[in-house]
Each structure stands twice: as C-alpha cells, then as structure tokens.
Length: 287
Image 1 (cartoon, rainbow, N blue to C red):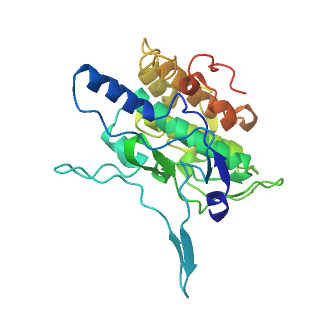
Image 2 (image 1 turned 45 degrees about the horizontal axis):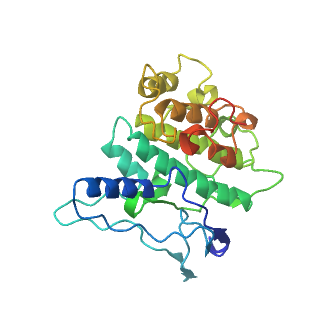
C-alpha cells in the first residue's frame, strides 16, 4: 500500500463513466428549472500528476506494537445529511438497498472506477486477489474506493498454488486446485461484482456451478442475467454516448466470467467495452 500510495498517476480526461456526469446533468436540470446550482465537482485537471490512484485507498501512515500492526487510512464515507439515515458505506450495503440490481448508470460508474483502479495495479505488477463488493467503499458524489490489500501481492512468474481471498469470488481454476497467476482471478472476481450489481446476488452458489460458469444456457446465473438484461431490455439504461446499456453490461459480465482464464479480457480491454466506453467499444470480442 505504501508503494501504491507513492506511485505517480497522470489524471486522464474525464471518462464516459465518470460520476461527475451526474453533476453535469443536475446542473443542466437546475438551470432549466431556475433552481440553485449543485455544489461544484471536485477539482480534476487533465494531465495533472498525483500520487496514488483516485480510486485506491491511500496509506497515510503505519506503526506496530508488540501485538498488532496499525494502518492509518482516510475516511471516505460521506457524512449523513440532517434528518437522513447513514448512507451505505460500501457496495455490499448499497446492493442490499437494491435487491433486484442497481440502476445501469450507477453500475457503469462503479465498474468503470474499479476497472480503472485495477488497470493501474496490474500495470505496476500488483494483483489484489480479494476483489468483492465489501472491499469497495463508497465516497461522496458517486466515487468509490478499493480497499483491503491483505491478500494482494506482486505478480510472480510461477503464480500461486494457495488461495487467499473469498470463495464466492474465486475463479474455476482456483476451485479446481490449479496454479493461478492473479490477474485473471482479479478479472473473474470483477465479473462477479458486476453480476452482483446487476442481479443483486452472487452468480454461483456452489463450487461446481462456478466451474461450469455460463457454459450451459440453463445455468441459474445465465437465466437470472437474461431476466435482468435481455428479453427486450437490452438497450435499457443506454446513455447518449452509447454506453450503459444493460445488454452490453451482460456481455461484459459473460466475458469476465469465462471459465478459461486465457479467454478473459485484461482490464485495459474491460475499459474499452461498450458498456463503459460507449460507441466504438467492443461487445463480442473482449480479448
């Protein structure tokens, strides 16, 4: 975490999935209705060099005593508004409030931020190995932050033969007891998170189901995904740039949850999917 927090990151142009687009919509609506403008978005200067990644929890300090290590981390959870209950603290809590899946615009924002953070990690030879909704905390204005690097490690040519993470998010190769290399496992776990945001529950209830994946059209996970994203709802949620449609979200999930690790897209390719990138992004050719 110390290395990540001190690695330079060049702020790109605002991405199509950036949550700031909600503030722009709010501002346009406020002008049309002659209402007070919303608070301005956080400062973001394209090309600015910052330390760490905006969607990865920084390490402020650490120390130890005779019994424990202590990590000093910033608090990102937004303060509750007067008269309102505490907002959800992480994606797990947020999903609980949307039992049938989140709105497509929210899903696009969160998945884009998570994928960008993991692109940064993988580019620097780091794998997280415990991607799940509980490890994505929520910040203000639609921002989310990746936490919990207790299972992370540097990419090894020999890979790993022991699993450290959460079984519901473990890829088939891990459940079969095979050696794995980390990056592909992060992509599988990301696919599980994406499915959870869409459907409201994990795709696979048993290790046997996970090892079969979506290969059977009669798999419960495949049926539930189609119920949310197909059957005439393929273009639901589509934004003006062509991204955000439920059918494209389902295509991204299926690509990340391919049983063969070699067939899963890298996170660079995930960011180029039509669901996240909009018109011109891929749908059926993820690798």
